[in-house]
Image 1: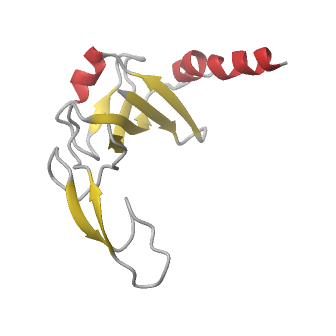
Image 2: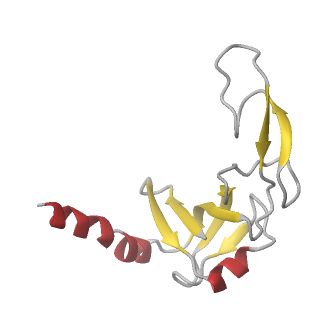
Image 3: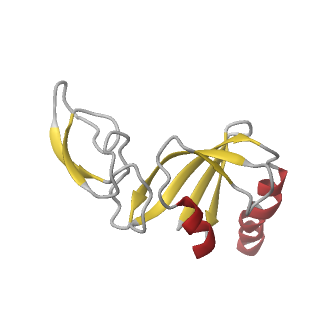
Length: 132
């Protein structure tokens, strides 16, 4: 499972590959639930803001299940209308995290983010040095 952790204070997003143990802690959680990210640093808390399943269908906040469902959407998550009043039936994933969810988006609420900066920004700096 991939975690995209955003820090609103610094306006940066960090991509973290979660192992199976960390993934199990997130199973059964819903969107807008607060989660403790103790595997990164103690005291770091985040809110689940969204995600997508293994086939790329986005998690929708109104579908209260683990499964996919077809909804008639007029805009928002999963559909961007091109014309005024346009609606379309689209398939979206439920808001509960299950084994099928491959990517989870998180927003940091409280805690020290210095560890995120130290651990997960070195990869980008090393790539820039290799390109030179």
